Length: 331
Length: 261
Image (cartoon, rainbow over all chains, first blue to last red; front, side):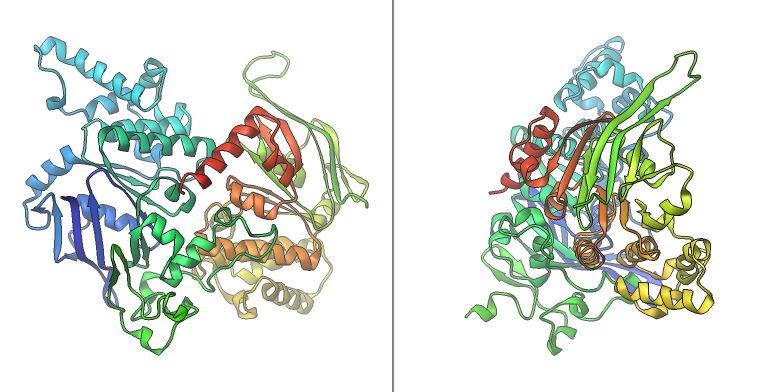
């Protein structure tokens, strides 16, 4: 059974020129024990999806969906209180910038102890509880690979290196023993050794605890090393979605192909210093979104029909939305 | 062939507190030796706080080295010799977003180095600005634009235009691709390589992205805690890394690439 099932999620933002669709019919299914990657450039609405899942969006935005369920319970119709309860115990988020999302004036140990749910601790008399909490916190830190937990629990966020901060964020996310962890660009701005450490940690947690991860990033190298499934977003539309191996072998949408080809690491046949393939133009802003397929103006294969929003088509597990997908002209 | 830029035994000491008391933590950069030829690209790789940005600052003259010398075209570059240095070594800053003045038009931003360093009159300056804008793939009309009217990729182009407007021989760039999205990033990489071919620039850049480093650089300098641990040809370093730290870097990169299959 799928953990999180989102169908046709649409989010509209009010602006001077009327309601703008920041997200346009997003589909996303996350199964148990799966690492699902959400790829897109900045402004493609990745972070808004994360916010919509945990319910941290503004009241003035209009959100509609055919289906948005958490293990069969509808997230949109339930009361705020119920929803918060689910999110508190089952979903946790690792935020983008660890240093700025941690409290700068509270020691890290106290911040970590605060998020531990009382129900996860051993039952005991009240004078044992503080000790139990501390023990649980230090176990968590050992699990994410922090050895000197005594030192780091006393220190403030600005005193410790960036990757340790990120490990603290992961420990805080794992503290409530969630079913789903949403990692919002956890490796941004990190160097490669720290990055591979964090990725290893996440994939180990995924294997050992059967934890599902929604991995949001635009770093394709990091994503392809750990994810099983991938959804590609462009300007608030889902472009393509399917198994990672399948997408890498045979991308059907021109955007996915361009994205994969823009990373020189994927191509071993590329001679050094040769020009990389890239799409012309830049990502449109939300005020000037093109109608129909939003890739239209940048797409090398765009034709007249592209002013209509393409239907979602499906080949087995692989879904894509394009009028002229890449496999059509091979026939 | 003559070296375009060479650096010999460059050192920089940074100590907190008073020097004669010999207190406080001390950070020493160097000694650093390297040389590049025209049309070559040197990549500087290393951990955070290993002195990469400091090295870039020393090269463009923002900081004064304690000892060692920088030679440009076999001629020694003194620290006070700003006139000569500014015309030949230009820098692209890390965050093109914040390094452009939001209050003046792009035309004035690009005109400023011309006003300060050349004797061109108004007409000639405008012509030069327009020509440079065209060179980096923007329109001449962009000189009436302000920073907020441009997208990320276009801003990066303007930052690059500001660097090449004085026809320098060397460009030093501090993480020029870090803040860009993949599709815009490959555009910028292409632009840089094209400019390098056309103008024969020497290009020194700092990056975390080993995929791009491998693709565009001829030489690599690996730094750790202010010391150069390894340097050499890109191919050699990626295939046969010698130092422990370099091995770790390359293996981590390879593991990420191979992990998916």
